[in-house]
Image (cartoon, rainbow, N blue to C red):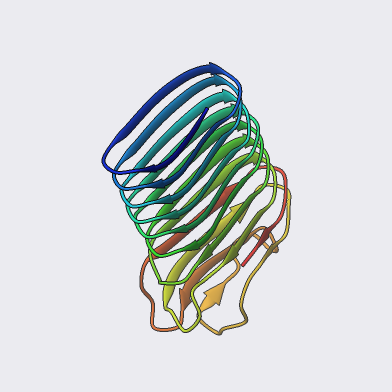
Length: 188
């Protein structure tokens, strides 16, 4: 299904196959049983859910909520808050302007911000890589049960469990960056 250049709100429910929405003038709510989602240039908020299929969301003016159970999620250039949940697959949330909460059971998480805002990322089995907004201040709490945690070199960051944890202040402080993985590395 393809929707293009639609003014106003869009609500779509599918059972299988790809759903593509481009150039939407308002909020978008899309739910798909089995198939990919591609949403681009949305001038409102996005609520996207699929059971099994890749989710790609880019250029969103509002908040983003994305959920999938078996595939990857990629979100690029979102101005609002981002919430991404995945059962089995990776999450990429890049060039974000606001807070992000990313959670997956089995998969890697990559996050980058253009403005300092709170970050919460957790995975049971996968690496976490975060690129903070340049020049921004943050409070950091990062821990891994069995992987190395690496971050910027500052005198205000302290290791609490050897190489498996890093806590403290980056720059002048600011929003909390809370990162947790059970069986992989964290890079900041």
